[in-house]
Amino acid sequence: MITTDQALEIILKKAKRLEPVSVPLIESLGKVLAEDIVSGDDIPPFANSAMDGYAVVASDTKDASEDTPVELEVLEDQPAGTVATQAVRKGTAIRIMTGAPLPDGADAVVQVENTISGKDQRVRHGFVKILKPVRATNNVREAGEDVKRGEIVLTVGTLLGPAALGLLASLGHPHVKVFRPARIAIITTGDELLEIDQPLQPGKIRNSNAYSLYAQVEQTGAVPVKAGISVDTKEALARILKTALGDADIIMTTGGVSVGDYDLVKDVLDLLGAKLEFWRVAQKPGKPFGFWTYEGKSIFGLPGNPVATMVCFEEYVRPAARKMMGYDLLFRPEVEATTTNDIKKKPGRIHFIRVIVEKNDNVYTVSSTGPQGSGILKSMVLANGLALIPADIEFVQAGGKVKAHLIDQPEDH
Image (cartoon, rainbow, N blue to C red; front, side, top):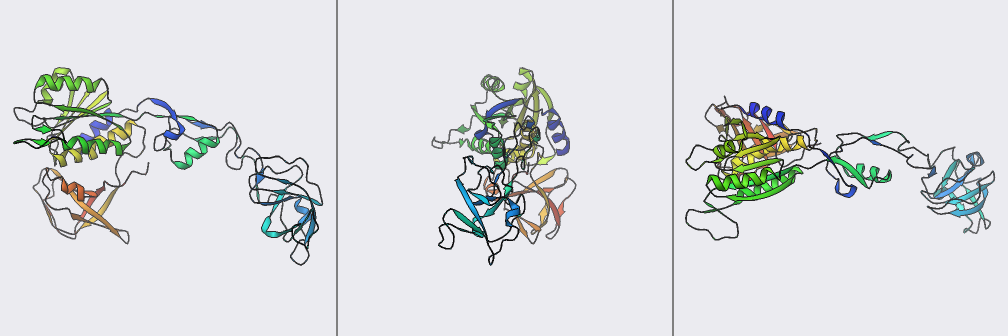
């Protein structure tokens, strides 16, 4: 039996980045960039007005004030998306809208709030009065102010958020290369399992693990592949595993990894030629947890109890999948917290306690969600964190410090 740290080290060492794929820009949100992006253009591509107002020669306005406004002749109106037909010269101005290219000859824009236009009876038709001076480049966005041609604007490994998508759009990238989302197959095992739309029968339970895992995979940004239920025969399990190995990057089985007569996962994977990397981890829940590799693919033998299944996914499968998809930060946020209740356990295994984490004045506290049996799925429903009680600790008194993983919060990257 190995430690949790040893298990995680083995798993992450085997997790390799997946190959890049090109996806439509609109579908790239939350994925990891697999190429450097070099700008082929200046952004903005031309000097333009940052305000609605008047494009002017700044020196014309140096003596302008509300008491002594400067009057300029208005040559034309220039909406956004158009180019002025005339150049601004001393004594003249062009009415300009936000985003319109700065006309030739102009070097500043007076915002409209600091003018009186010819619509006012105090100003001659075709003229504007400037009430405040501007300096050269005032209210002007210079060409290349945001991005310069030839600049590397995004690098491999960048997490693509809304701003990155906007920048890529401004540079004319309808498609972008990202690390491919991992395909994760979900195989549930056991003669006792029913599909969720079937009525309960004596000795049978509904297949809840498939749905918890499906949701966890989707939250990770990977693609869940529901491979189905395998009955407890080697032939059935081998058949479903072969299909999954041909269709997924990661394969997860639930149940069948303990020491019972019908725990067949180890035997079948051995027959298929998978390499056992480890079996059994010093943790609770999730001691009967195995990990295999096969032709570059990772196979996780998760326990069958619902809580153990979810905890093992959080602590092992999720970081492996994130590494494969190119993310830098692999783990949930970890905080130090004060426990509000006593925690007792036997030595020898690390315990993952389902807890409610609260934060007040930058101080975290954790409270148990109640009974901690590995089959009590409600304990996970209530939890937003997992408190980690080290293997050698038997008792943590209320008020003591523990580490906790925040399982309802995403990684920063």
